[in-house]
Length: 196
Image 1 (cartoon, rainbow, N blue to C red):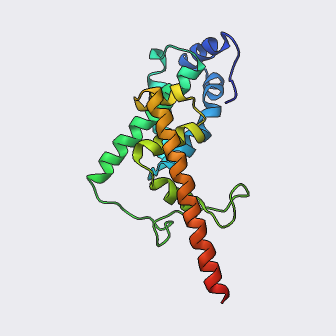
Image 2: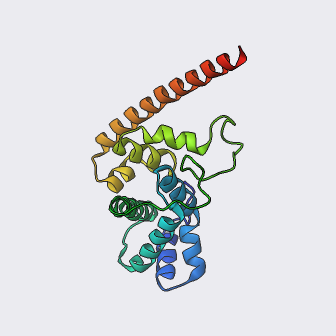
């Protein structure tokens, strides 16, 4: 995590942002938006960009109430996002889903492959693997790995004890490793069949 400011500079930045200084607001959130979007996307949010925007709106609306340091601020923003995601899921379960034209037949948005991922593995594949974790494991692994939060910060966001977070992370990573090995083994077997 890169620091926005040093020392009491964060307090001054927070104060300026709460008074409406757009440059301060930009500096305050610049490093959070990418990890926030990644967390929501990998958590399976139907509209991650909408939830990021709603998180930022709620953050701005309640910014004057926040008290704490930079790490506390990051945890606070992700807590807002986490609660919005839970609320969004509840709301979507109560109403039918509409499929847009930009969704492929399997229900996944078309995304370009990135150099960071093995060409055989798409974001859809990774979502499918992460979706097989328990909801608690998924939250912890994504907040720790994608968002880069400490164990204590994740504990605050998800409302669990730090030791429980450590156990969930360990089990989640172990489960992902097993799932990934099984998926790769299936790919090798399919490639072997195709070569015959």
